[in-house]
Length: 114
Image (cartoon, rainbow, N blue to C red; front, side, top):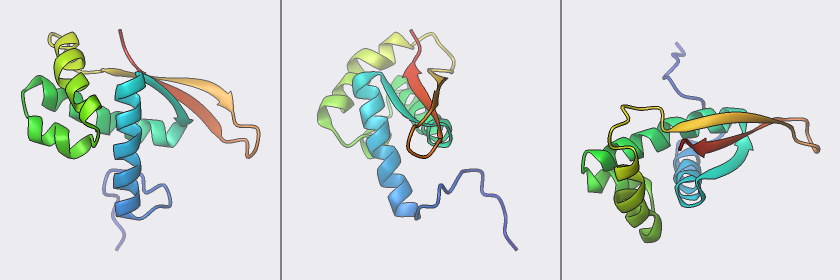
């Protein structure tokens, strides 16, 4: 029996998904906005919100597991977490920007809120 486990598979293996979202989260936290497809943006939101919440609560090991770059790790703990100290959640915003020319896939920009 197939059960919905609460996340999108995106036609990728578990290890590929984990690596992809780790890389995408690192890019989003470094540049504070990236452009990707809508389903990937919706799943990336879950990853990034958890990373920022862990940083706010001082769970450095959990942040380190999700973010591979030392530069981004320091930025999350020193810049981003204090910025959202009083905010209970909703650290990202997804804006749909149109369709991709090659395959007509809907594209969205995900960014950190101000």
